[in-house]
Length: 176
Length: 432
Image: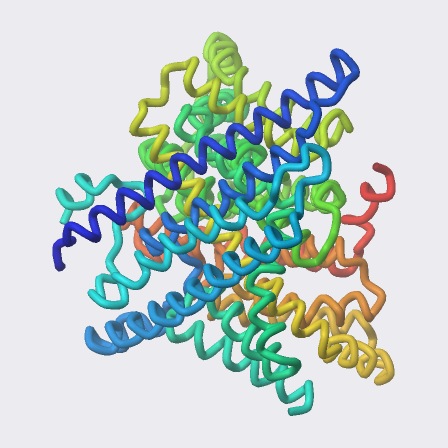
């Protein structure tokens, strides 16, 4: 097994950091929802703009999980051919799969950016709080760009063995 | 190119990409965008890569996925599964096969918090399997019990698979959760029955029952109180009409986190690991839904599935025969693919046919869920069985498959009932 370069380590930590921050955003969205329920039932008044805030937090939060998914290669995959291909065959197939994944992720990033630009040009805003929605897509594009860079490094280096989500980098290297 | 050829080529391309190890969400996105581009134009096709994620991320219902996944991860880290298992053991431990029955009941109750089959199997594989083996259960039967019980994680609401189905099939999540109540109860009864029959047919596969003192039962009930409160908040809140599914999921995620912190069961490392697990699973499910939704959009535009349904109706083939053929198709597909993948790939094509024949999409969602769960246990790719083989390699894959056979038979009986009598699933939907 090949050891990770400094760039790969940095990207790995960035992917995890973005997942932690996104997790906090999602928990915050849950708190806003609870607060809205409590306010409606106790003081008979809703949390003003709760839906707008929840949508913002959830959209950014969920997209912020994508770099971790890519970094740990945590996908629904069917590996029917598996070891029958031999080492070289597996490398080739994995290389192809990684390249297709890279192209699709790059496509998402490009389109997220375009959507953000389009919404900004129209001046689109959320329904209640009138929050501009374009930044939500620009931030999403930023997270996707991080996923693209991680995937690109994977394509170039051919390192398909990833640190599983349940392990830290230290644990992974100790077990190797 | 005519739409039928294009749709068939698209389906073939997805299968080829999947065989070449391309992740399902990525494969469906790539094929969906290219097919749509060929059918209309590529400018519109590429724009689907933003418009579909936008409509999915903007759907309130789907936000329950990260919240339920967080709830399950925190519940695991907070040791709630352990408490549930102890209570179930204290309750039914005194009957023959009691510990196996406790595993099934524990999985069912934990499923109402975890929402996922794999999470429930992994949790009870480490929790219940060693105890069952230690008490003298046949290792294959013990592992088979956990593999079957694990499927209750996906069967008992809140079920992540049902949420995914609801998003793609555009059905109300609450309706699906209500429709699955009786089938989930039948699953539990079927598994308990399978254990009881095994106790009669192969008495050596399990030890003699052990008495449980009332003191042990009281202590177990006391420790399990947080899990029961959580169950009451989430399931009671949803079915009692107190909360929407999203509100219950929010409350569940935050409450589980607080329970774990207050009981000092979760360290910072454990919290971060739980967060990572939920995060990676969320992204994996979202990308799969986005891919499936792009494919659905393309197939819907061609109207090929609707035309196929019209042809089937005009052929005068009994609808039940078409459904039976689809069920067999899924059982065969399940032998090659992961069932969640099979559902995502085929739903854009199959659902219009099912609804075109006059069946309720909510009922089909329940049937799909049972089929997916069956696939979790059946060879050659039974995910739960594989997982248990990883957790307890000494048992042996073949022995686990042998041990899970009584539960597969129970599930096949349940599937037959649900297909023949859709009202089993739909009765409560009409009542709520």
